[in-house]
Amino acid sequence: MKRLVILPFAEIDLKETLDYYKEKTEGIDIVFLKEINSSFRQILKNPEIAPKYRRDIQKFVLSKFPFCIYYIDTVQVIYIFAIFHNKRNPKEWQRRKMQ
Image (cartoon, rainbow, N blue to C red; front, side, top):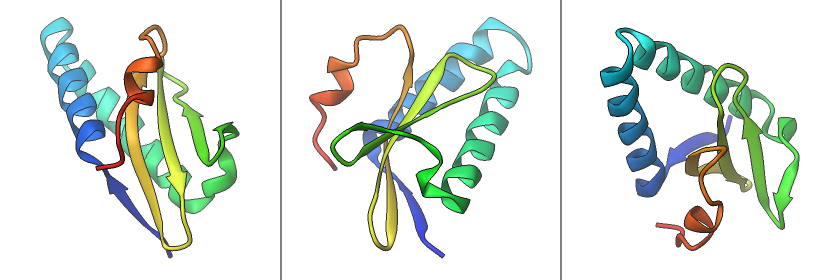
């Protein structure tokens, strides 16, 4: 089975979102984290579940929150490089380098 690697920018995206939701409504951060983990499992189980967004980048849309997970599927690893709110400017994550 492939492994999933969350790149540093995506880790920051996740932490900032969890912090935001934690302040907003009690327990919603846990619901968001469960949705993210469920999405990661779905992506690992079937990497082609999400359509191609650009070139090799795939875009997985969360069902319960207005976020997308952007990833690249390689032979052995799935790289998560953005967990992004749908209303944010996509140019922000597009400028990121694979780190």
